[in-house]
Image (spheres, rainbow, N blue to C red):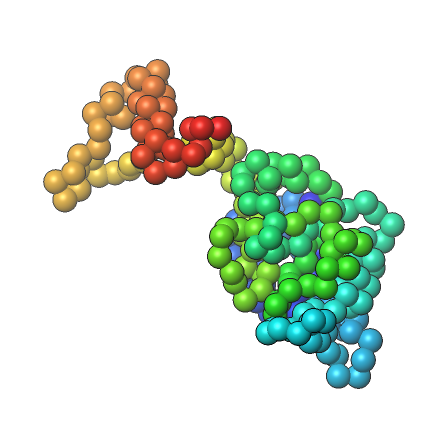
Amino acid sequence: MHIDVLTLFPGMFRGFLKESMIAKAIKLEELKVKLINYRKYSGNKHNQVDDYPYGGGAGMVIKAEPVYKAVKLAKKKTDAPVIYFTPQGRLLTQEVLREYVSTEKIILICGHYKELDQRVRDLVVTDEISVGDYVLSGGELPAMIFIDGISRLLPGVLGDMESAETDSFSDGLLGYPCYTRPPEFMGLKVPEVLLNGNHKLIAKWRKEQALLLTKKRRPDLLKK
């Protein structure tokens, strides 16, 4: 998978791309990430990419031209989807990640300031995604979340795909409680069912616990 990230702050990604599962995915050549600073497509000597909003009001708006140029060059006659991260987008879920996991190339746009000129959204953006009902300074952190989530689903990155298949949201539920050694810690013991080696009972217990936890914390998921 090849991901082009259009951002005004490429430095934010450098440490992120060198650590943990992302670094492993890149080393395995399952993932390639290219950082593109769309400021260089500003078309003016001051490299200005923002301006005051028409109609007045607070905040600055990113101009359409630099982002449009950067996207067109990144696409290079491909039909790569273009994702823009915005609080106005659809919620990022495990299902959304699965929609994109087989895509050969993806272009991510990280906005900043007040918003991105609506015209570039109308012209080149194919999907708008939000990571939650809150506002961040820019799209860089949502882009990292997207890249991290999708790279876990790429072949060989986790080592054991069963790990991803039993994560929260994989079957529509929250994940079950997990334990490891020692069998007792601070007076709290590992549930006996996990120690008896009966895989059928263990699977049943885990399903029950996932249902109980989902009912308690995210009943909206059960309604689906």
